[in-house]
Amino acid sequence: MKKAFRECIQPLCSNAVHVTCVAHGVNLIGATIYKSFPLVDKFVGEMKKAFRLSSRKRALFKAHLQKCGVEDPRAPPAPVKTRWNSWIEAVELHSEYFEHYPSLLEKVQESYGDAAGVDGLVSMMQEIYTELKYTTRCIAIFGKKVASLLKAAEGQEVAAHKVFNALFALWGYLKAASLEDYVVLMRQEGVPDDEAAHVGEIRSGMCRAAHKAQELLEKSDTWKFFKSMRALDPLQLKSMSHELCDYENIPGIGRDAGNLAAEWLLYINTCKGAYLQ
Image (cartoon, rainbow, N blue to C red; front, side):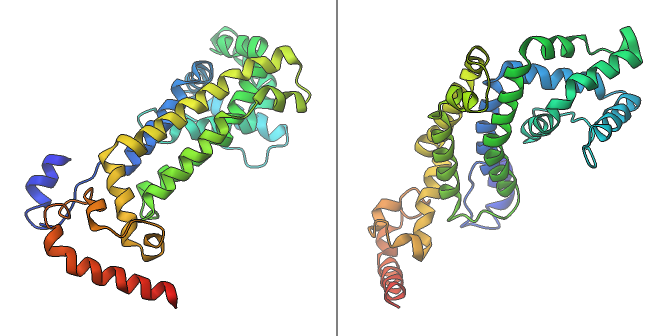
């Protein structure tokens, strides 16, 4: 991408600035989440393996959910980790249907016998049902924020002067999630203490995701650039430094600070006039 920018775009648009893909940075946070929950990742993989290649099993999946009262059920997900958001979206779907999975897997075994290919899933339902149920629910809730920002960054919904604020808000959300006492929350839902203790990794997983977001905010040149770009929004400039030298993360400003001083002063005065109106 850098080579394409340097050789094709920059000669035509000399003032253009190359920054690392914003969506890619947000996806790194999403990758931190799935790496923090290996049991959920294994469950998602087993579900994909069991239903992806069989149209009859997929039809049984939807038919069984309809019998359970689910209106217009979606097909079983087949996420690809390199396809941004697909893993989190798969967990959201599994969380929504999770309570129906024990009976679904039993039905698949009855219909296909030894060829069902769901023995591993049945074992997981028997051994770690509670842990999977509440962990997938928490990932679905907190991962939705990551997925929403990623979709916005892939499109044109996040303007340059708002990108840093969006990631900062996501970091704050994940940081708050990492401080939750999930054992207490599970107890409030009537989950026995010995089962509630199994969801402790949720907190550490959210902590890792928050740390990744903080690392991007503090160390990435891309996000330093977007932090400085907020100054080009008069509403945000009101609470920011008015010294041009503080915005050298924007390419060209450090080199041409002297030449831009008069224009910068005019911009500052114009913004101040807007504040007073």
